[in-house]
Structure formats: structure tokens, C-alpha cells
Image (cartoon, rainbow, N blue to C red; front, top):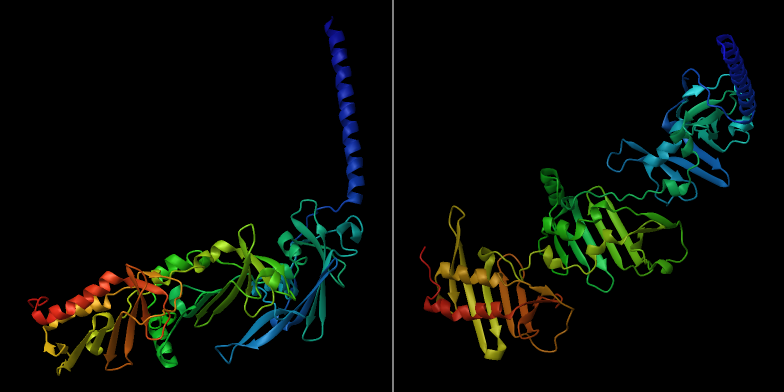
Length: 490
């Protein structure tokens, strides 16, 4: 084939290709123009100034409407609990004021009604308002201000890129763009606003605790001093020390042990899924007779919760004490609070008292016909140093030897918690302690089995056991004190 012929063929093919490309270009341009007429574009434009610039306190209420949903948030001005000169702005749901809502979430929804900025304005929009989802609007928010004026924000649909919402202000013909997160808030309902958080700090900040499992004795701790003493302690240390109120009054709480055995999971607690906003009947959830009640009170917070039945998927129904709604949360949060062994986080001694406040100890062993009486003559010198002279059954014994005996006596520990019992016999051993500054303490030991006594302090419950061997060893030391067997060199 000659060179001239090849050149002609090349030119012909090139012409065909150029013609084809031109045809595609004009077809796409025509198609794009047709699509612009039927879709909402994502145009660009210059940044816009603030559209609404007011104070939050200017608002009386905001009405949100989308589809069949209508939600009215009212801004209440309340006096601050701790500063009579301060005012708190609190958002509540009109008609459901007793439903606790998240204040940050409510402010996220209402902020645009007192401080609204757009990303940009659409210059020369192509299409009708309906093309932008603004006629009718997909959602509206109407702010009613205290000066009797109003502002209405209309939210359309998302842009094709799904990164903006179309927005208008009633009375303003311009179409604006706002960020997706802002536009999406106008579609929120009460479910998105409900406060699922529980406000409490570390255990050391508690001044009162109450945990009651259905069918079991409540576990209760509190500060036993005066209000002024509590305030002084809080100001000095930032904490309030608690002692047990029930079932073993006066016992100290070991905070770190309590955190490890009880609070580890609960520190992450949230209310979870909303099940019913305002149920007429709590029995389907087991909350008419709660399986667990928990209350943690701090200086500035009071968390009070009820728990009901478990579900098959490992969750448990719950509700806040002064709120009507029922939620479904993870059982694992509260699992350690069921069947608690309180001796894992309180002092385990049957009786623990200062030797320098004790005046006497009477030990009765009816089965052996034995009664021992111990008297302590307490002294304090001019410098405040304390000492005592111990008499055992009328015989003076060495002070150091008696301290060994006393250490063993108050060292009798509770080894396990058992089902509450009501003995049908008299105690096998009774210790009666008297003191200079408090009422007597009576510790009674009843036979439980071959290895354990059931212990009872004063009129408390009989629901724990202690080693028979330990108690009997203490009894056997008494006559040996008088013989000098336990004497020690100073």
C-alpha cells in the first residue's frame, strides 16, 4: 500500500473519531441540562453572615415539626440550687416536663434558633422550592421569643453529596446550605433527647449508699455525724466517710474493696434503650416489685434507680426513681450488686472497739457453768497518755498479756454470710462489753454446725458465722492469764 493511500485512511479514521467525541460531548451536555432541571444541585457560593443572632434566654419555646412528629421544647428559668443570685436555663418538653432530657442535646437542637449561620447561599438556584425539599419543608422549627416575635427555620432535603441540607428562613426568599449534622437535628424526637446518663463520681464522694435486693436485707451506709461535721469534712478532704447503717451498724466501708467487688461495671452505667415513655403498668417489666434498688447520694448528686426483670438477651429493665420511663440496660452493669457478700468490703470483726474505752467484759458459757468477769481500770496521765490495770476474775494480770487476749477477742471475725436464722436455743457463749462513752455491746454465739457459731451483735440479724475454734481459743486464754502463761517482757 502506498504512503499516500495510508495517509488518506488515517485522516478518515481521525475524522470519524473526532466526530464521535463531539457527538458524545453534546449529548452529555444536553443530558446534564435535563438532569439539572429534575435534581437538587450542590452549588457553591460566598460564605454568609450570621442569620439569627440572639441570646438563648430570649427564647420562650421552640416547636419542631417533621412528618407526623411534633415536639415543643420550653425554656424554663430556675433559681440555682446553690447560688440564690444565679439563674439556670433548663429545657423541658411541653406536656412531659417530668421526662428527664439531656440539656446538651436540647441545646444542640435549639441553638440555631438563637445563633444560626449558613455555610453559603445558593446563587440563581435552578428548579422550584419543591426540588430542594422546601415546599413543603421536610422539617420546621419555630422559635417563639419573649418579645412576642417569631422565627421559622425550614429544612429541606440533603444535597446529592449528602454533606449539606437546604435551608430557608420564613420571609426570606434565599436558599441556604447548612451542615448535615445541623439539619439532621430538626428531625430528632423525644427519644433522641431523653437523658440516659447517670451522674455520679467516685465512691469516695458518696455520703449515702443504699442497695436492696428483693428478698434480702438492705445494705446501707451513711455519714453518722452532724451536718456541720459533714460540711467540715467535705471542705477539708473533699470526701465524707461512711459507716454501715444496716445490716451491721457501725462497720467501716473499705472503699477500694467496694469499688473492686461492686462498682467496677457500674462506673460505665447508662440507662440504655427506651422501652416505654410512660407505662400505665410496671408489672410487665418486673418494676412493680423491683429486683434491685440502688441509691448513691453525693453532696450535689442523688442517683436513685430501680431494676426489674431480666431479658433473654442478658439485659435488665430499669427506671429512675422520680421519672416515669422504662429503659432496658445491660445486666452486667449491676450483676455484682446481686447476692453481694458484704464482708468483701466491710470490716469483718464481730466486735471491734478501742481497748482504752472498754470498762469491762463479761463472758458467759452456760453449758460449762462458767462466768468470767474482766474489769479494766482506765488511767490517763497529765500528758494524756493512757493506760489501764486489768483484773480477770478479781486477779490483776499483766497489761501486755491482757492486750494479747483483747487482740484475740476483738479479732474474732465473720467468716461467711448465711441465710437469716432464728435460733430455738440460748446462745452457747455471750460476751458483754461495757464502755465509758457508749452503750454496752452484747455478742452472742449460737451453735450453727460442728465448725461454726452463728454470731449476733445486740439485736442485729443472725445471718453470719464465725469459727468455733477461734472463739473457744479465746475462752481458754482467760484462766491462763491469771497463771502468767501469756506474760511478756516489755
